[in-house]
Figure 1 (cartoon, rainbow, N blue to C red):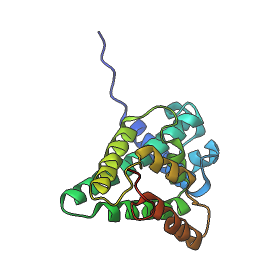
Figure 2 (figure 1 turned 180 degrees about the vertical axis):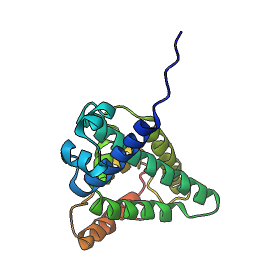
Figure 3 (figure 1 turned 30 degrees about the vertical axis):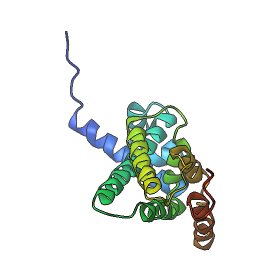
Length: 190
């Protein structure tokens, strides 16, 4: 029985450089950026890029998974802040605001939001979903979040957020959306 060899140090470095360049290029130009541009930004040959990521879908998927993981980390930080006494609805508002601001300048954030729930859940998405569920449950328990708001509703909001609009329009969207999430914005049916 043979054991799989550990990747060579240069292969590990190249993979990291490719992912970093892909994150940067996708953030700036969206997921349609060319593989040649990503390889050039990484300082590797296109063949090297394809050895690590046989298709563009594989590469974009790795970048999106990384972003979802970052949101999962953020969500887990929110859960820690809740345990330390933070107000859940304040965290919901901050989460939406942060998402809007990041997605306005980072196309990969928007791509990550579009991918949520699209092709089965990854481990990173499961972490993000669990953290978001705990946040929404805490806001419902506080009586601030409408009892029918789910994680899937939140994902719908993220997918349809006006990331490509001006900061004024994004702020207006948040002003209009928040009341629909809260118990103050619409009555709770008995």
